[in-house]
Length: 296
Image (tube, rainbow, N blue to C red; front, top):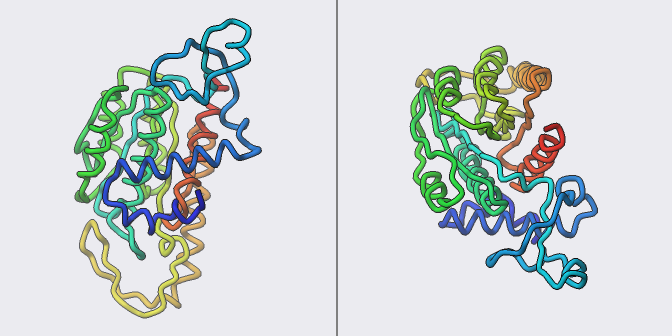
């Protein structure tokens, strides 16, 4: 599969979220199998008995030749973990300078992560939030269609914050989990890290995908105009050429501080621009999860 099939602008034309997720993940996995870096994230761990429905490509035929029994290979990344995808659906996520918004990209990524994790025999759950928790589907290994349907029905919420909803999510988690947060993190770094740290109760592992539109990173606007805050409705007249360099400096400081603070707190942080193919995020997820498995 070529990278163009992972381009979010191309994916936006696929109507069915299950088909989109399968298209991206199958292409991504095929790319991994062809990659010399496969061992980075898929180290062999053990054998288990073959079960009907297992991928026959994973059967160890050498073992079969010695024992006359079918066994498949298990890998480090296959930990049968609890995975919860936490989606920020606040109004600011409804911004997009091209064909998709941050929320669109978040939906695509969440669907791909759910599909990928489910087929690794993980239990997958979903939580959406703005200023509070909006929907919650507990982790399960049997209801991928429920997760995908819930993601497909997501619409932009209202004003957002991290503190309250993440605290309530943390209180609702009863078992150690891998928590994947998808958000534009439009709060000061101190507040972001304080809120996210609540999720580390009970030893949860955290992966944070910081989703930004390319124009939010580069501020590539040219014409003087009014900019509207999607959450408050406030309008501010701006001449982009006069503020571009200052804006870029502040954004770089914001990202660098988030990266530093989350690193200090052992939270995996990844900045993703919504113009980037989804395999970038999937590879980051897989490599980070592999590292988590080794640390455990």
